[in-house]
Length: 309
Image (cartoon, rainbow, N blue to C red; front, side, top):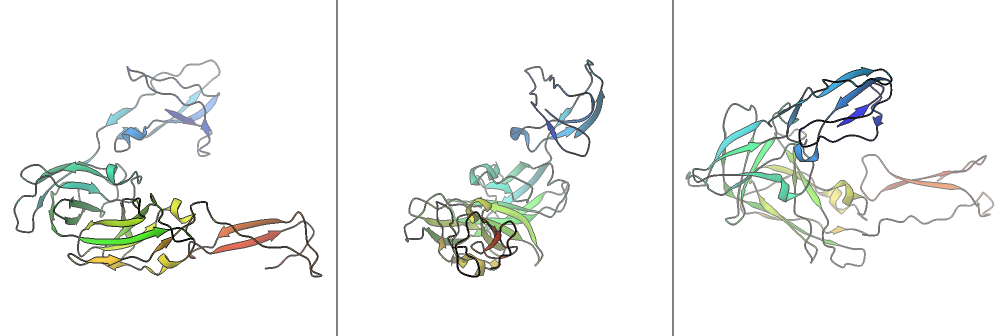
């Protein structure tokens, strides 16, 4: 349970509270107005009604009746079939909307088909408001995958599996040694528009290999390092990787991803027009807008001094 004050400022009041075994809570707030809301990392798919409450308290008052009702997550139902049209049992199904946190592949596939190929998938409450995102079905042992885009929550989703495609590559450091546990992700593209979903991928293995798949054939994807990985990428090789539409059974080779696990370093020298060293100048390096992950804008700021480059 958290509170913010004043309304609109989104300044948290600490400490926040937690419900006890009976579901009750108590949060101390200063006198005046506050917005109270509740949530939990374990309940991201659930909806709280109302989402937030505006309360006003006076000094010494205990405000009762600040109640929330936990609503179950929306459910998407559907069926998955094999390439020959038979029911696909034991297939993992996951929601690839761009509203979910990328906890990893293990937390992505939240449903598995039964013997008749049917599944029920709880979805993120925010995804239920903006439809059109993809469901991904995958049978890892058979190397099969399929995709369908959810346009409404009432119509069962039909997913047909086909021989999956794969993206392969390697991650190395600046000396060419393999780097394990580097994470990337795939943006899923629908109909030539912008990204409609995000698909987490397994990180590089102990030999630095990236093996991503099976992926649904015919789907268009854009591979990118995750935002944490971008901070250690040292070249722009992946900037040239455009949207890829993969075919059945295709193995597409990605450029080598070079990283510096210790981060990036910019070194240089600051001097005046007469080439005298300048001490105490502040140097700021920022990633340029829309540029390669490795391109930085270096700005020099020094009091009462005009600087360039």
